[in-house]
View: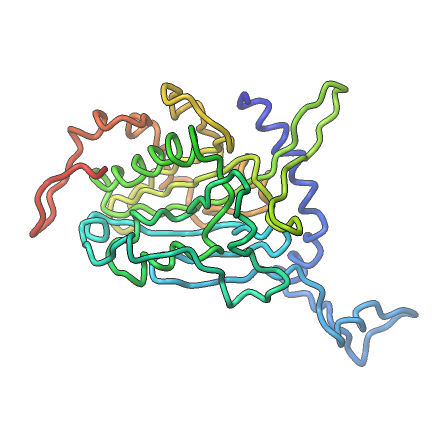
Amino acid sequence: MTKLALAIVAAASAATGAACTVVYFSSKNNISIYPTSQQPGLVHPAGLFEYGFPGPVNDLAKRHAFISSYDRRTRNPSWVVEHITPVSLATKGGDRKSSQFVEDATVPDIYRAKLKDYLRSGYDRGHQVPAADAQFSQNAMDDTFVLTNICPQVGDGFNRDYWSRFEQFCRRLTTKYPSVRIVTGPLYLPKLHKDGKWRVSYEVIGAPPNIAVPTHFYKVIVAEDGITGGPVAVGAFVLPNSAIDNKTPLIQFSVSIEMIERASGLEFLRKLPASRKTELCKQIHCDLSVREFNESRITLPGHSTRILN
C-alpha cells in the first residue's frame, strides 16, 4: 500500500471513531454530561447514566514493563507503551521458557480474549511488547504473555520474520539513544474494492467469533538523547499484517504520526514542542540490518559494548 493510499484510508478510518467523539470532548473540556437538579429543557437524556454509563470502556493496566489500554470491542489492545534502555535490556532476570500465555482476569469475562480463541486459528499470538524487551525480571517477562498484550498476527513472513526484525531494530536503537519509548498497536484500515468503494473488512477468530484480526500494526518510536529539554527523535511506522519480503526497506513503512492518529483515533506527543522534535530516519539509517549501528555503539558502566539481537 502506498503512502498516499495509507493517508486516504487513515482519513476513512477516522470515521469509525466518530461515535466516541462526544464523550471524549465532554471529558476533555470538563463539560458535565450527567444530570443536575437545575438542568433546563423538556428532555433529560443524561438521566440514563444514573443506571450506568455505556462507555466505551478501555481497560487500562500498568504492568512491570509496560502500560496498556485494552479495546473490549476488538479484544485487542488499542495501544501498549513500553520503555527500553541499555541497562534494562542488559539486565537478565527473566526466562521466556518459564512464561506461558494467560488470559487477563482483570477484564470481565464477556469481553475477555480467550486462549481457546487462538486454537487452530492459523494466527500467532503476537506480542505488542516483545518478551525480549522485558528480560529484566520474570514478572516483567510473564506480563508480556497476558492476552491484553497480544494480537493475532500472521506467523510466517511477519511475526516470526519481518516484525521480529523490526523489534530488533527498536532494541538496537539503545546503542545510540539511552532512552527509547515505543507505542505499539493494531489498526483496521479500509481497502479499495473493485467497485471503487473503500470498505473496512477483517477476520474475526474464536468460537464464537471473538477476536478481531488487525489489517495493520503501528509503532510510534520516541528516542531520547538523555538531556533534559534536548532533541527527541520520532519515528512512525505502519506495517501490514501479512508476509513481508525481508528485502523490503523499513523506510517504505515510515509514515507521519498524523496518519496513525487519524486511523486509530488516538493522540501522540501533543505536548512535545516542535522545536525539540527531529525525524528518526534522518538521524539514523532506518534499515533492519545491524550495520547502520556499528558506529553508534555506546558503553555503559559495568557493561561491555554490544549489539543486541
